[in-house]
Structure formats: C-alpha cells, structure tokens
Image: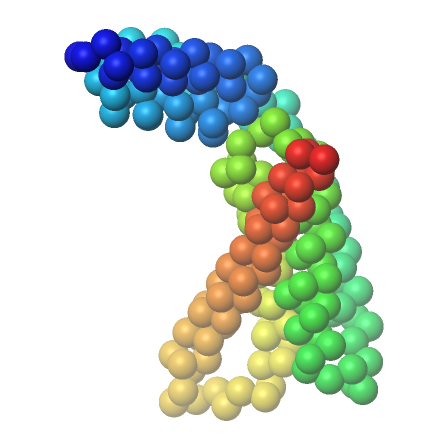
Length: 192
C-alpha cells in the first residue's frame, strides 16, 4: 500500500470512528467501505463493524414501540375511513386519504419516535410494516364486506387471487409512502 493510499485509509477509519461516536451508523459503514477499498483488510474494520451492529441492535430494542404508534395511527385512520366514507367523496379523495394523508401522518410519527440517529433502514422498515399491516387489514376487510359485488361460481379462483393481490399491493403502496416520509421528513428535521 502506498503512503498516499495509507493516508486515505487511515482518514476513512478515523471518519468511521467519528461517525460511529456521533451515532451516524450509515455514514460509519460508508467510511469503512471506503477504507476497505483503499486497501485496509476487513479484519481491521471488523471491530468497528461489530460495534455498529451491536449499537444498531440495542437501538432496535429501545425503539420497539415506535412501530406500534404508527400502526395505531394508521388503524384509527383506516377505521374512520372504513365506517365513515360518504358516498359523495369520490375516488380521488379516498386515494388521497388512504394512500397519502394516513400514511404520511403515521410515517412521520414513526420517524419522529425512532429518531434521526437511527439508521434510515430502521425508520423505513418500522413505518412500512406498521402502516402496511393496517392498510392490508383495511383492504382485506373492505373486500370481504363487498364480496356480493363479485360473482361467485366458476370465477372463485380469480376472486381469491384478487383478495390476495389487492390487499398486498395496497399495503405495499401505503407502506412505501409511510417509509419514505419516515426517512425523508425525519432526515430533514434532524439536520435542521
């Protein structure tokens, strides 16, 4: 390893340690990857990577309730939408509420509770799971209650497929919106 490469590697190791100390684990991992690409062996970075993993896991335990608050916000929102949807609202307003307003509110709360110091993956996963599960339940129950609109008989497999695909698709969309809000809005607030 040349002297210049050695300096770059040592700088990246120092940057990784500083990022770890500040709780910026994604940045610390990035600096370790840069150090390894500069020629530092993985055995020299393993100690820091292990410390990052332990810290992330301990924070995962500490922020376990953050997903629950997101679920309950989404659950109440979808419950209101389920029982009080006026006929005059129309599809555009329903889409705005179901796929934007409710996931944004829940995702923001999850991101806020998890905190800026937690990794972006953790914030996204927590918001995605909590809102996605609530949306899946809402959609599945809505389809069951409206099953009279679907012809039963020879087309039962298509109806069953519809009952599987639509709730999963809607849950994925709402979960992605909530996860993105959790990561992006919390990220901006954390930097302010």
